[in-house]
Figure 1: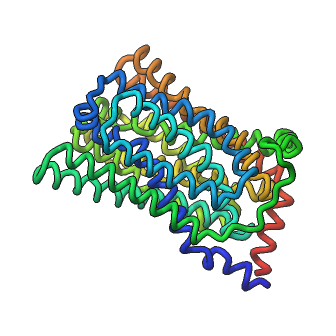
Figure 2 (figure 1 turned 45 degrees about the horizontal axis):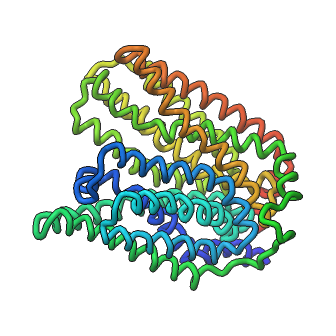
Length: 424
């Protein structure tokens, strides 16, 4: 029996790889316009305002979808939801190849907010949980987040090379079309692969209603639900604010624009390290304990950035603290849903739990840019950045306290999981 338990993740490794690639590429179509901004605007004949509205259409529907998607994940099988999401997302990309008028492009982005979130994200979390045993959850989500980082690094480099080659050999429009077509085909193929490869556990549904009120009441009554919301909120605040380190390095430390850009890209090289190390460590010492350690490293890193004197000769020290922030924030992110096993959420109500936890936890993305802007406008130069980083430091301390509270609350279950691991 122990051998079978221990081998569950290894047995499901090919499926995990497909879900990792799907979890990265399903967002390529909704976001690629940002990387090819000028070309996209030119050939779709858009204004900057209309371009911004596309992001608002996607983001607005995504926020609602995070909530409703959880109930969908408990109402319908994850295998069907993931397949539908990937194929429809890719299919909408093919419509873009016709270069339709703005209202159609706007509608496509709004629908992408549904297909990449409502019918996808919560179902994906549920599917990932099913790939490993209770003592393999750290590895599952660590490999997932780290794998997404590697996938994005590789695919963005290859797509950019394709775009650059075709723009020189043929035209910018042909290059843009090739990007759209490639992402669309990949999404459809991934949908087919998920349908054929993912072997879903026996699907259980307690009610025919879209919202399982009984499960919802259970989730809302658990103190771990609100602690998990806080843990995600506090760590994701850094995840969606780290790019302010780039202008801080150029304005305060006198770094060149090239070095500043390298500082931003450096985050993606730290991501796999933070995710993989935290994932395997979590299955040895516990997901929440790894999360606490990551928070401590993050706090040290942010404090280091704040208190390192802004001198060009000390930029090497700044880079050390930045590396600590990058690795730790992604380590925390990989534990966002790995800790659910410690919270004793039954697999069949994973969707309902994430319907509450995800939108609240990720809502920090609505506030962080606004707070950053206010700080930078109110305090000139380095002071504005330091005030904002000070806020992030305080938020991280709150996250660490929430993690300690989680560990105390889930002590019995954590001991059971570790005992099970030792027995195996």
